[in-house]
Length: 176
Image (cartoon, rainbow, N blue to C red; front, side):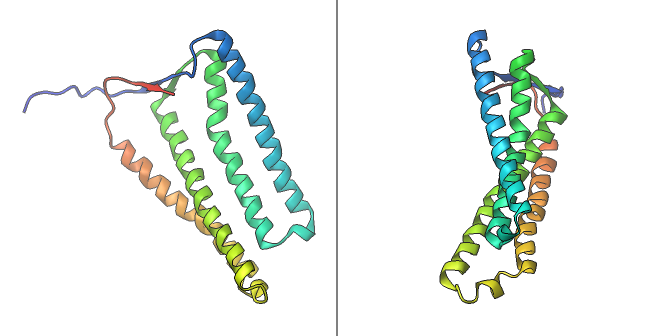
């Protein structure tokens, strides 16, 4: 067996969307505006649903959860990208990369499963309108909303634990 390089990468270089400083300024402003609009929209939805008792129904409960997940998903990636654009520092450490990947998987899985839960909620509302309030009890809504969060925790943790075992060496540049 011939010897191999056992050194590992401690950081990754994130290649930007553009190397042109004028375009980077435009991209920074564009992504910052989009992030602020997204954050304000999702937080407004959560605040409106939690403050109005008429909106304390299963559909709006799931919608508030979905807004929280979307806020978390964007907050996981966009601020780091904005920092990289602004500081011209294009590197991310291996532990930070793993952390960001964990939360990206976590929120992505919760988002997908929660949309399936919302589809089930609408199925029950359309196909069984007279039994809807009995079927979609507050207890079941809590279980259907909490299930994706618990499921996503374990799946994301499994992905990251498997990734920790990988050895990255050589080219550490990641194109955007």
